[in-house]
Image (tube, rainbow, N blue to C red; front, side):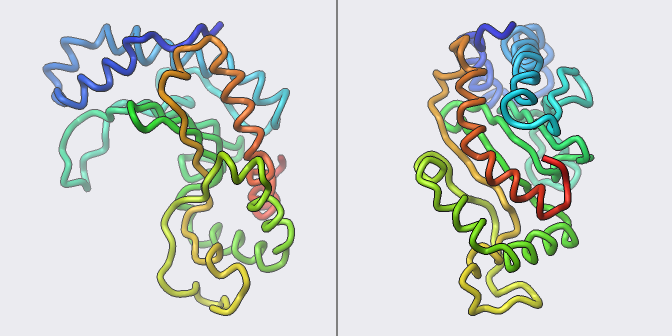
Length: 228
């Protein structure tokens, strides 16, 4: 069972950000295993049944070193000017069972000193998927406004992501939801203090806040004709 991340987890990530090279990482790989990867896998294994029991059975929590919910520490530098080889944060995604990659609807956890947050929604969906969500907003504006403006959700979560400058093709610039229709990402973020990850109750803490974003996820799944 998950007992909290070790205090050395954030320390390791901070040091990696200052020594982002293969030699340093290889020399400190055992620290990465003990402070980052193993506790992350235990967190995933522990939270999985709670996600299904308390939120939805449609989201996967796969505690595998490769190909599971834990994102790789290795950066894809092929198309980036930044050639540093390693990510300096922990990224975990509990994606919808019908999703194939990070662009699927899902719940997310990001761990980094000074920038820890939960995420929920869908990030950079392909144009066909994005258009389905926009059309669903036009057809179901009241349900969207209700979840977006819910006091508990709005007090902790913030809709973020990239947006178009102009209205998307086929949608009126005068529509009451034009700000939301311009979105290229339908994601919500909730920041929290990194000290929360050290507690054995962090799984309960995560579930409690993921629940606040459940209406958003249900809405997006309905828009994409996915079970929730």
